[in-house]
Image 1 (tube, rainbow, N blue to C red):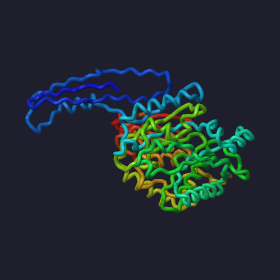
Image 2 (image 1 turned 60 degrees about the vertical axis):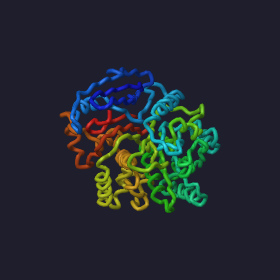
Image 3 (image 1 turned 30 degrees about the vertical axis):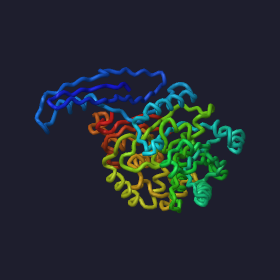
Image 4 (image 1 turned 120 degrees about the vertical axis):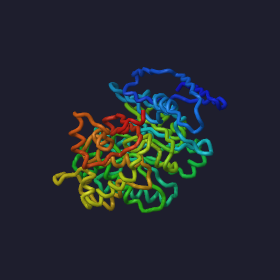
Length: 435
């Protein structure tokens, strides 16, 4: 951004304040150009006024000029395939948003930074022989990757590995490989290191006795695997699944922007290529920073606040209680004639809750969006249901009236980037409060 200076003159001593104008870029193609309009330097001279009086001209000026952007965005290659340059551009964009994020008192730990991309299979094959052999043997096979934040306690870590295999058996998968993700803990500050988990990839393939899955049913089955694994965790330590998909993977943590690619050594590999990347730099407002609450989440990167979060969470819980044992089937988008074994496992107690009041508003927004998407809707349709416009156009009104009984709005100033591996996009809150 360009530094601008605003001067305010009055009977009081002259005050000078530096402001920064930030630019949030959502580039659908790397060659896209954005035209910037308006002055980069604003000078405003207020008239003398009585003490404690409201300066309405100042308010109006602030609303129209000071539109600070957020530490979230995406970069995507619209025509070409995966490339290294998309990832490098995303790193550069993330670095440029460092000023939007929070930093611990140790001056090293961050509130959170992260990136979501396509799965870089070449990177994983390079250090995982079992995966390389499997992909060579069955080159067209759909494989999923679950990114686990595993407790560092040896006993808890062993339990996590055990449950990862058990959840696979229950949902019609086999574990192809367990990959310990290479990291560099030296870049962590003391606050981040104190709560740092270990990190692992679980590579999953459809079990031999389960009918072959198409991409949609594969994502649905991986969703049930993730819910089953999370719901079966029975220890006090935090265990978290950062991503679970056959299309996307998430790297995130309590680090600053430039440290992310140093911490996760995968991101520095020359083999890492992707067609898109969502990036996020977090400033924690309503929750204390945690590794699991860094963003992106599994489907979104969100900046802002969901002011209706208490009502949204309560309504989601009410729907789950009303659905009872059918909640698992609803979550999976299953039908009675579906032969997929993942649909047979619909125990709501084992699946665990959809929403969690102990998590951030962004985490619950993501979990609810994931539910609607895995139940059969497209990701952009699901987000429209959750964040409808305040005043839909005549062409849109029927759509929103039809879906209004299904989901109340998740309301509040918000900018959301979203992706399901096939579609990537961005959406403002229903009142357009996040420029």
